[in-house]
Length: 224
Ligand code: A5P
Figure 1: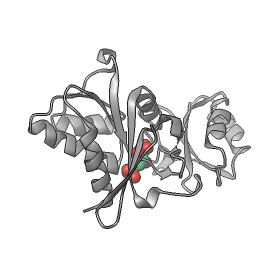
Figure 2: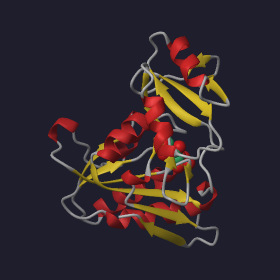
Figure 3: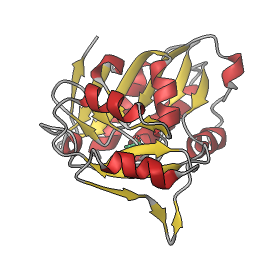
């Protein structure tokens, strides 16, 4: 079995009747969304919130009941992918550009379950350029401030235009390798006016990481 699918389907077992579930974004979360939809067809009753417009559209097509954030008392759990995971359970996320909504959902969920294939496991974060969501206003100045802290930065493009997030913002992809202290880098970047969010998800947010292996098996580390 595809390692992403193996990890995602295994974590979909955390979902139980009556839960409000945060649905992640990306090619790994996609498999979890499909598994949850299958379980709904077999009688599972849940409500869900989405971490991106793309995920909301997929969920609606699969008849997963999506509710508005104003109707949510608590998100019981969220399942989402990641671009890199270090041995302590810190993550880089945002390869798909959904990091801000993903972090809002993860940090407001009782449990946050991460699903990745084995290629995402690293010793030090940062080979994957760190996505940073910034406001369009005076973005050149914000970029300059970020650039002073990084090895290299670029604004993400979609063809010859800037990539625009679901929130109407831009994404800076920054090379900070090796990221020795993810939590400190997150705080330092977030202290720059104009930065909306960073793709560093510290291990404090993470409940579990399920890794899909080449042979179709999975390994799970519980952090809480
Ligand atoms: C979306 O913005 C991201 O945070 C994804 O969760 C992350 O990029 C992992 O994506 P894949 O599961 O597609 O590799």
